[in-house]
Length: 429
Image (tube, rainbow, N blue to C red; front, side, top):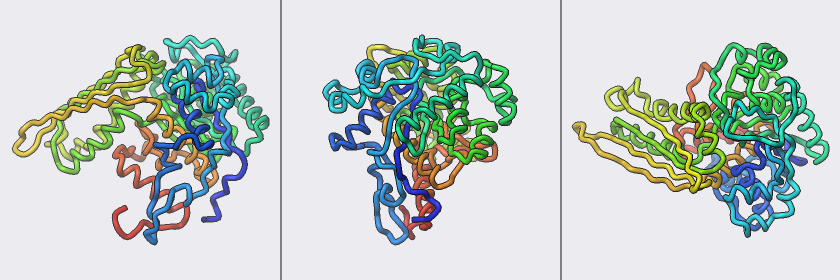
């Protein structure tokens, strides 16, 4: 093990924004059950994936780098509703009561702190358990105090902050986001038009030396101001938007079309879901944020400027429809019009009946675990190697995001090998 990676000693406090949400309670329940040996952490790269080393030995990733032990994780967080994690999970209806009861007492002990919330950024939500802050700067100070108190009360060595709350309204990048000084000035001036609650959480986390993970497509840490701050505080940041369902399929299928040099003329995607996320996205301003995240994938992978004859005129449309009876069980349809030899057309239909939170929960856990590893390895700023888990990978202005799932997976493995001073094996891994 390279000496510059600090060991994962002590407890890791995981503070979740939206700790009572469907993804959060599913992640927490599964983690608690796994560490009791009552379930397997299926879907978790950190817990179950292997990596082939330079000498061709294949090992579990958690045996190669010092990841935090699941037993050393303490969960907490903020929510706009006061329900404890057990009651919140019962309301979400993702997991069955018999599975929640396996860790009922531990879930009941997880009670949220009042959330930093602005109704204008999520108009379909009416939070009842929220902070009273006169300005965005005061909101940040209250969040910093929450982090410090939680860390002390739970005897935590380190903290990681995860956004698993709803998608905020679309906020374009503007001058207030261009530098740390301008961001702080906007917070102190209480510029509520361009400083979102998620930015306050991110700033508070970075200020307290905690990695921040953005699990929604909000404009938040993907700004020059936050990049500057994370570098200054030597803290890793990652995101954004968990790559769980339809976009996961796109990042697998699109590379196949490009690898085979098959043309694509159209890609129509639609979803129905009925959880709180679906309700929030039913608001056009919030859907705009998600739409931008989803639409970027195809162009990035297919590179129409490089292959105009194949992908120069792809019609790509994304729809999300709120359908309450479906609850957390999302259904995603894709109609893909492709063409092959001599331009002859073909069609592919994909109908993915997925469980949104079941797919997102291990992603959220892995992002926390790997962000903690990055912190202990002295890595700061944008964690490009964690793009594997994200629908809209964060990147700076000098670099293009990588969306191809297999290229992203190679980035994860190469980063881990580099951490321990290893090279790639001599054949394709």
